[in-house]
Length: 297
Image (cartoon, rainbow, N blue to C red; front, side, top):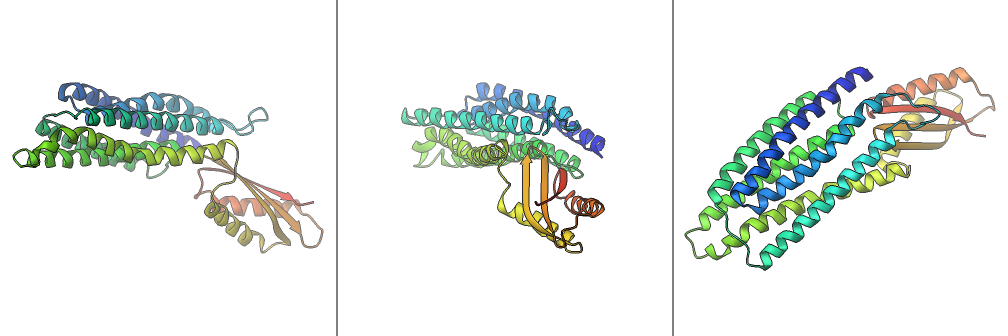
């Protein structure tokens, strides 16, 4: 099963990496040819995403190695750390892009050829849709945190290119109207809107991965879901749940179930059965899961 997951993840990341390289080069070249701040915003964001995807790609084989005494969490925390670094860098890039475009607006803005930008962005949007559909098809059987991160970024590209296309279509309509004085401000304004749209996910992922790095318990809905399964699986045995210790870092989830014996008798075979039941009931809801049953003393 692990080999199959690794093959799927490796294939998806290779495809995403190839697509990101091609689209990034295209966007950087187009930003200079078109002179558009909006196109440049997209290109810079994708360039940093590409640079941060490379260490992720190198890390994946190590995520499938078993834990050891020397590395009790394996490389899972490295995954959380790299994802954290990725989104911190992207957040800094986004904030910098907003600031630079605000400066352009304060200096009177600038004008670009709306038709050329519209044709380019509409074509790019079509390419991003094709890439997303291919990645979603490959990720039907398995989707890790890194894969979800890549899928999100392709969705962002689709929404941003679509939004940019609509904005410059609007500029074409304004060209021969009394509102044509706003045209110099459209490109940088759209770039700021796109950048603001990009802010949300980095902030959420930074908070999530910080919690994982300091080994905080997961969100309450996750805890409630695990607690429900644990209570259902131990109700047929002479034990009751005393305490639940859940740790999530990267793609791995460790669950320690502390149980009290109702008759002061502990049976190892019961612990084994409870462990198997809980693992079976939760293995499809979490990527990589480890369950331990511990007597509460």
